[in-house]
Image (cartoon, rainbow, N blue to C red):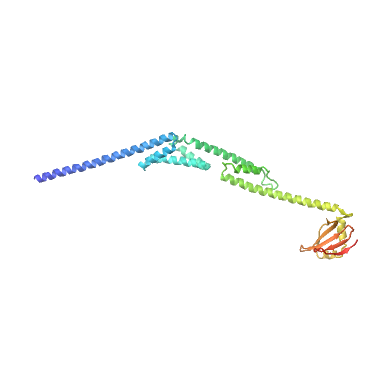
Length: 298
């Protein structure tokens, strides 16, 4: 009887100990949870205060601390996320990616936490506006560059100033890759146009000079013998009719060392020789090797 009583008391005592330990564990867990929650809350608040003081690094550090304590905390995630978007915005401005920067900025301003970023974002937003203005100015210069000549008119050539304007645009620190491509395409086309026009002008000048020389020689005479008379005198050469029959061609008379010279070419383009009419109206034939034959006095 006494033994059963003792056993019952022992079991009751053991149960009370187990319940007590379990209760302590629950209390400890609640205490730890409350402590962790307090750290997370304090870290988030300190992060927000740091943002209000424009201290981005301190804000990031606090939000990271909050997530280190509670990786599932949605509020800390949101604050960290908006900071990351802000950093993307700054990077886009630095890289002159205007459209990307503008899109990120628009999304940031829709965020209900944006008010704490209004001060810190002022400088990069101002840089974005300056960049947009500079790009716009460059676009006006590129438009003016393309107006320097009419690409539809084959005789229209850009002025000499276009090289200066091209260099001014390409060396501008704000010029975009798209603008560089546009300017370089213009430079290539304008240079090709200029070269074609200059080549055409040179050809026209050369033809004019040759014509001037021909006219000059036609008006010249050797001892009263004009180019026209030299052509008529050349017919007296005994083999002249053979040259004609062979299909040879005769150049216009030219003056060389006091005589009229008429070049004779075969149908295949090779030189046949020369007819020489000297100041005494003597006609002779010279082979390409310099030998003279068929001397025919007047």
